[in-house]
Every structure is written in structure tokens, then in C-alpha cells.
Image (cartoon, rainbow, N blue to C red; front, top):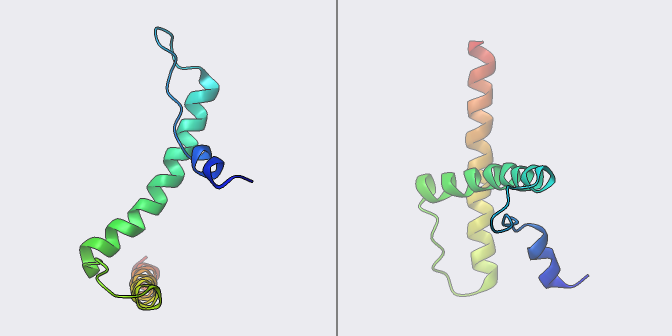
Length: 88
């Protein structure tokens, strides 16, 4: 599969000029938005809470920083769910 086609699968489709959005296109765009919303939440959390801005030299160090940020995020979510289970 062409790498360029992978990106086009996730792009929203535009409505035809002068016509309403077809229902199939609206459903496809909504499904893509739902996936994007779940992923973007994690990145926003990392950026805001952990100040995730990678200024490292080398891929390995950048991967290590991302791994630690993901680990911290997962622990934070675990604590949140554990507290929620105790309360209610």
C-alpha cells in the first residue's frame, strides 16, 4: 500500500459545491472525527501537564522521553480510575 494513501484515508471529505453533504460522507467524517478526538485528548494532556516539547538530539532520546511521558500518563489515568472505583 502506498504510504500517501494511508494519510488520505484519515482526511475528511469536502462536500460538493452547491449540494448538501451526502449522508454516507457525513457518517464517514463523523467516524474520523471520533477517532481523532480520542487521540488528540492524550496529546493535549501530555503537552499541558508534562510540558511535552521534545528538544533532544537523536531518535532514541526522543523515544525515551515519549515513553516516559506515556508511562506517566498511564499512571495518572490508573490513579484516576482507582479513585473513581473507591468513591462510586
